[in-house]
Length: 206
Ligand code: TYD
Image 1 (cartoon, rainbow, N blue to C red):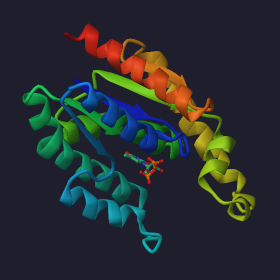
Image 2 (image 1 turned 60 degrees about the vertical axis):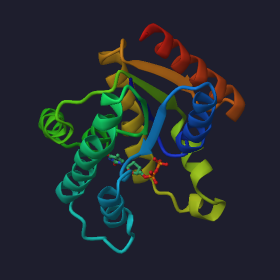
Image 3 (image 1 turned 90 degrees about the vertical axis):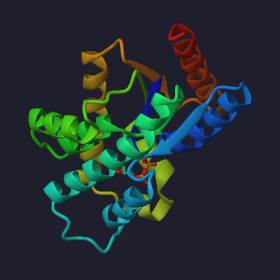
């Protein structure tokens, strides 16, 4: 079973995913967890190019191709082999991040992006996607120290609002795949909700 976690900046995905992985492993579930962009040696090199603040001239089209290149490698090298072995794959971000950020956030053509995504992932879609939903300003504030927060411009906030609304549209379009968790709750409450959602999905998948 292939499960992805999605959400805006500061929603706590990575911390929650680490905890979920530990707990599921302790119950004897064969779990492989990974993250995007990255998750493979080649993907991690691509991640460095994407995340380097020095790469100011990175064009939005180049950026998409790099996200997709890292994902193609992750699908072939990690996700597909794990699923073939009957494992549970938990992934911190996946294709929906591209639709939410590059599509809804940066305004690139959604149909074209979907086609490119299908090419990169060889049409592999998650069985379950959990949106860790969070108010944009809370998320950005969690991520930044206070004086950086003061320099956040309106553009940045508006961009993340579009990303969040994009996630909600995706969830509305495919309600059978998506579940939404309120990430503004305490870390332990969020963990319990995520854990129960995943256990239910694993039970139903038997
Ligand atoms: P990361 O440091 O992993 O942040 P987070 O903890 O929020 O996941 O950085 C990932 C960043 O890349 C995040 O801002 C979302 C963005 N992103 C895209 O724009 N498109 C994508 O396809 C992916 C996978 C990530």
